[in-house]
Image (cartoon, rainbow over all chains, first blue to last red; front, side):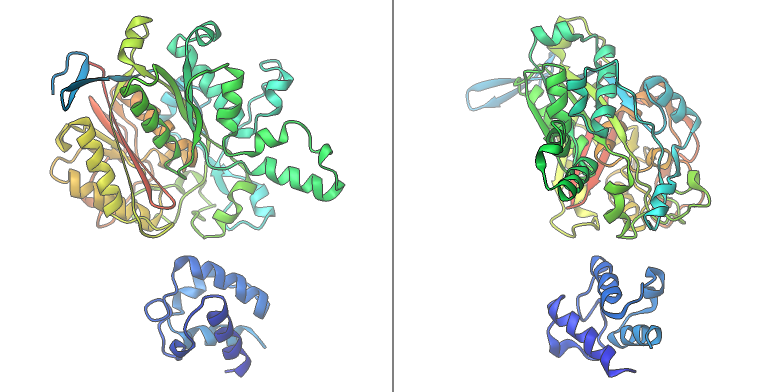
Length: 79
Length: 423
């Protein structure tokens, strides 16, 4: 897992989505713990394209449940 | 309540007479027909108006599905000055309104001699705004945008233009409430006439059909992606629905007080018995059950009717997984015991958005007049909640005395209308 991925993801969650940094534990559930909802996922796709340079397929995000899942999803698609 | 051609409501020592509100004309320009007769035929046979717009694929849309509609050619019909301020949806609205006025027996002489109002539903006007700013960015000169631009660009473009073309002198504004816009427009008109503040109002809704207006909506992944089978993509209440299909056009109804209709010898098509509304106070795009339930209950109360007096419900159901589910729950809550026929004509037309409320009142009135329930096409398998409803998967021959039409929009705005045969 690239440290850069964790750093960038945490940064946009804090800056853009105004989530308390203390809540950003790897096992935190995106929806239940971090309060991210359906319309937020639309914006996450936009941010990932800007910060990591690839286009998320919405259908692939269905399996991303926790923060660690999100780190992993992005990590696998960046080199 | 005594009903002797008007309602009587005691307010302290005052007795206030409330007018009965009737529909005396209908006109439509739709993806399933360019006039009332064509639409009636399509509803009867269950024809879909959905197709593919290749331009959306060029733009990188997730879904190229849309209702397919042709722009009318109004050159020779309207003067240049009248045409120049009309946006696409204004053109549809003009055609639909002219048909409605003709059916109502109202001509320009009548409009000159009588105060008639207009309340139309609309909530966007994308292309004129885009064209104007593109031109300004390119030329750095606003005097090159042209005189029609501003009048096409505003949300109130339809009422703004039609009130001028038709020389209307009554109520004049546009109702914006997302996908409930034109249902609310009819509701507002009904309230004004009921209270004697207007005799006749042109009510309706118009919706532009183009890629530009739907881009950001497509970006929410809310549209069906069943592009390999367009006419099967819009499948309200079906277990395998995967999203809505955007569509549009325009629909107009002439509503008037019974007294006015009687006075001028107009043919009465139906009576508006009640209007209900509510706001969810919840999520901006995901509907809930409680809000629509209140809208339905309020509508029944306003009509002074019980749930078992509704013969047919034209559901809002847009073919989204969550939306149809929650509406099914709300309908079951109120109509579960009685089980009226239910169908969503959006299965054929797609989601007509700002036009939908008015068009669906027209589609339902046509069913009532002609003794049938239009099919909720593509209803192949119910889900757990729609299984509890009596959904017309094929056309049913049926006698309808009273129908209810629902429209729900972004922001949790809800509108319900009850319409009956006039007796």
